[in-house]
Length: 331
Image 1 (spheres, rainbow, N blue to C red):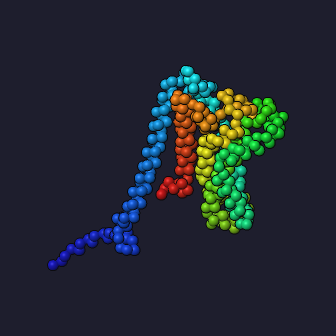
Image 2: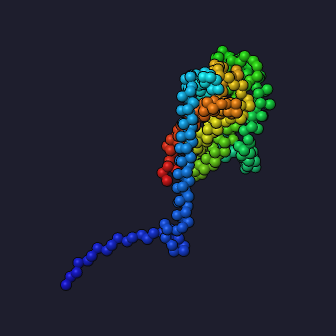
Image 3: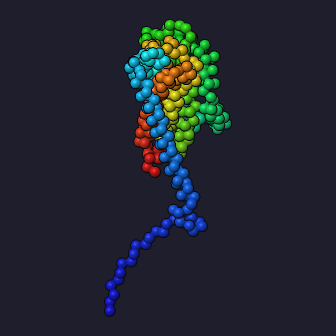
C-alpha cells in the first residue's frame, strides 16, 4: 500500500538563549532593564507635563489681572496697581541676541571642529580638544564677570568703527556710552556656546566613513575636497543638532546676560545702543522684588520661553530625522 508523503512542518527557530541556557526574553536582568527604561521615559513625560500644567495655571492667573496686552505691550509693571506687562521687548531681545550668537559661533565652531578632526596633527589636536572641553565647563557667572570687566570696556572701539562705516544702516549706529547692548550679549553668548557646538561637531566629523575619505584621496582629491564631499554631507545633521543645542543655551542664559546688559523696555533699531532685555534676564532681575502677581507674570514669561525652547528642539529633531542613518530613526 502506497502512503502519500506528508509535508514536514517548517522548522521553528528557537528563541535565543544566553550562555547559561536560559531564554533571553525571560532573563531577570532584561526585564529589570526594560522596566527601568520604560519607567524613565514615562517619568520624563510626566515631569514635562507637570511643568507645563504649572506654568499654564500660573500664567492664566497673571493674565486675568493684566491690564495690558501680554504679547504687544512695551512695559513691565507687574507689581503696579493695576498690573501692566507684556513680553514684546523680551521676545525681541531673546531672539535677536540668540541669532547674533548663532551667526558668530556656528561658522567658527565648525571650522575649529574640522581643524581638530581632519587638519591638525595629533600633538596639537589632542590638547586643543582638551582646552575646548574645559571651556564648555566654565560656569555662566564667570563668563558674565569676564564680559562685564573685560569685554564691555574693549568693545567701544569696535562700535565706533561700526558707526563710522555702517552707521548709515541704522542697525549698527552707535550713540556712545557703555556698549551694554544686545550685540554685546550676542558676542558673549557666542563665546559661551562655541565649545558646545565645537565638541558635538568634532565628534560627528570623526565618525565620517573613512573608506569614503580614503577613496577620495586615492582618486586625487585635495583635503578640502574630501571634507566638502565626504565629511560635511555626513556631518550635516550633527552640526544642526549641535547648533540647536547651543541655541537652547543661548535662549535660556541668565546670569551672563544680566551682568553685561543694561535693560529697558524699549526696542532700539540699533543693536549697539543699550536697551532691550531677555526672558531669563528679566526673571532673574525681578523675581526677588516681585509680589504675587509679579511672580505670576514672570512665570508667564517663562512659559513663553518654555514653548520657544520646545519648538526649537522639535524643529531640530525633524531636521535630523531626515538623515535616518545618523539619527537612529530607522533603528
